[in-house]
Image (cartoon, rainbow, N blue to C red):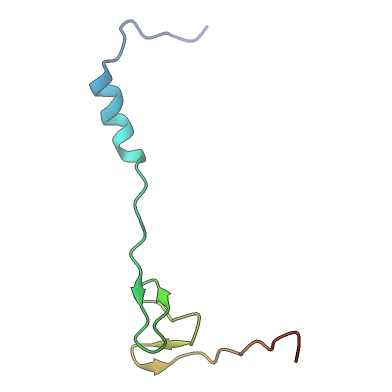
Length: 66
């Protein structure tokens, strides 16, 4: 048999434990080249630029009707 708690934990103690479970919004910034939103210190997935320089070449998708 597993042990059981001898006393009930208070609401404050329970809530202090759960304080770490809150979700935090990610910090996103706008790309200086194309203006799309991206994570800081990462290459923009839309245009491939970082710190004013083109790091990767992004292929443009063709439309299905063309």
